[in-house]
Image (cartoon, rainbow, N blue to C red; front, side, top):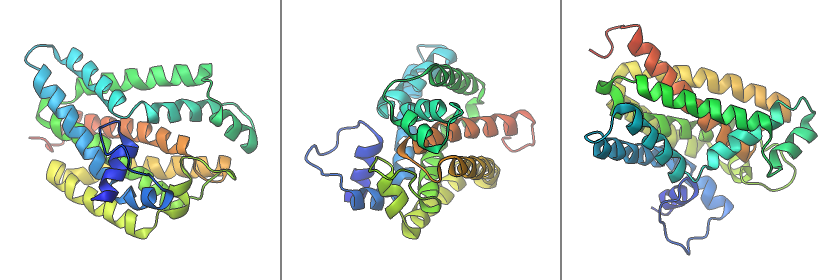
Amino acid sequence: MKSFLTALKFLTILPVHKKMDIQDKKLAKSAGYFPLVGALIGLLLVAVDFILRPFFPDSIVNLFILITLILVTGALHLDGFMDSIDGFFSGQNKKRILEIMRDSRIGSFGILAVICLLLLKLSLLNEIQFSIRYSTLILMPALSRWSVVYLAKIYPYARKSKGTGEPFAKLVGKKELIIATLFMAVLIGLLFQLKGIIIWLGAFVILILLGRWINKKIDGMTGDTYGAMIEIIEIIILISIYCISSINLGLYG
């Protein structure tokens, strides 16, 4: 229970015991519960949709869903996404990339990239079929947060100094990855049955490719790259679900 609450406190701004001390080992141990926290975020998005749908058109409801997703996470992952874009597209070496990513100032690349990201996410939400809408809203934050557990187990920490991502890269082990993966397997089976394998595979391929590219650039992962990958995988999940439903494979009835 403590591990779950630690994950909830770290990944969201939801009220958790204020005196709870998030230590490195406790944070790493809580990684197995990241997909569960993601699923709870998804349920919150479903609640927003259910409450607002009778009063607003789909496009407005989706905007509120997107705003809710940003607020409940404290924009933590978006910040990591912008910092990562600024760093990796600076054309600099590893040392300079890490310095740029740690800089609190956001550059033009980061601003433009996050605008495009949010517009794409909103557009894809507008196109998701209603019959799979709630399943999508739950899967998107859950599977994207599973990706952090995978990356933490596979790749080292890129910085020599201490940072947000250090406990994951150094302390997350097989146990946390197995717990997170088993939960995702059950959740995907419940939400999308066998067709969920296609969605998971699409996200996993992108996760592997981007993970290797990031590792090649900076020799590991940071807190910013974890946040960036969450945002990117959310987009990949939405694209995968949209494509599968659009080509009418008979998967959604």
